[in-house]
Image 1 (spheres, helix red, strand yellow):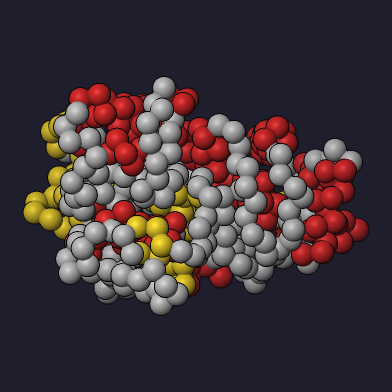
Image 2 (cartoon, one colour; image 1 turned 120 degrees about the vertical axis):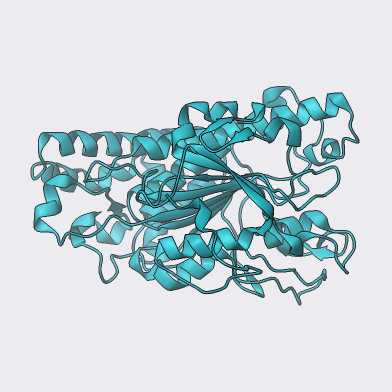
Amino acid sequence: MSDGPLEPSHGLSRRRFLAATALRGLGTAIALPSFASLRATETPADPPTRMAFVYVPNGVHVDRWQSSGSGRDYQLGATLEPLADLRDHFQVISGLAHRNGTAGPDGAGDHARATATILTGMRPRKTSGSDIRAGISVDQLAAQRIGRQTRFPSLELSCDAVRKSGSCDSGYACAYSYNMSWRSESQPATPEANPRLVFERLFGSGTGAERARSIAARRDGQQSVLDFVAEEARSLGGRLDAADRRKLDEYLTGIRELEAQLARFDRLPKPQVPDIDLPDGPPPSYGEHMRLMADMLVLAFQTDSTRIATLMFAHDGSDRTFPEIGVGDGHHSISHHQGDREKLDKIARIDRFYAEQFAYLLRRLHESREADGGTLLDRSMIVYTSGLSDGNRHRHDDLPVILAGRAGNRLAAGRHLVLGGERPMSDLFVTMLDLAGAPVDQFGDSTGRLDDVRA
């Protein structure tokens, strides 16, 4: 998660935080979703547009992924069936590519290049040393332009352990494989893999020492973060109408349930605050880990703590197994299937499993309503993609891409967009930056704007 002010920054309403003066030293602050009851006492503003990027590794089973037909009259690919009830809220895009992910003069290392190029569009320097170089990523460019409007400029999440040094893929530094977000061409934005630490960052306030004491007090006393703001919550509830009181109650109940879920998984030592090395020991279930991280992303958007996020389900080249769905083979290993039917079937099951987690994220965003009645999904742009299409041949063309959300009715949805030829994925990013309020003329290897995605 990018560093940012932990107290309300300029331009943010003081009403958005439940942090009583007497409790400030305990390091707790709970940002709130917007409430229609309070809009009359606040300066009206257009609802913000959020953007997020969700990454899956090692390409896909292309035949099972690909949708047939085009426009609104199309059929979702078999592995995307978990998204069927949400099809009016996204568009499948075919024909986007990252040419800078291909071998070119650099030879082997397609997995490292896949991750390094996916949000930068730039060819990474082939090195396993400290002289890494890629390019600023689209999320971090947006964070530089509009990130000061929120508590955190951006949020970087992963469901993988993070490696910061060494060589991971045919002479490429591990920094390329484990980071999709780059603050500059030489500085990756390291993602957080521990959901407990994400929760503490989102709901912490004050200095590192104050937040550490808050964590200790809540753990030692078996308390909830809500216990420290209960009186303020009751006071706020008295100023809300019935509908917003229900919304507040549902929101706070969701936080309490999330804390309970974290507690079940929390076998880690007490986190040191604020700058730490990530501890080992993620939740025992990979699916639960991904959904916890999706919950964190939704909370961050719901409370307007940030408007920009990345979520890496796994790094490219990951050889993770999937006992939850009966796949005991490593993902990377079977991605080199050479046409073997059994391996292809297992890849399809993995693809569907990932699609189920993405569907969970979209449903959570769709269920969260803003003060004017719109949903978070309506106001978002969520890209779901992989840096490879066919993992067997390390193809970087016709990448699997879903663009979900409408960006405030400015994006089309409910269709399959088939692009002619091979368009740089960076063209999509230029258009997304426009819609996010951070316009640029050129990004990565872009050749123009991909206005085909607009409504």
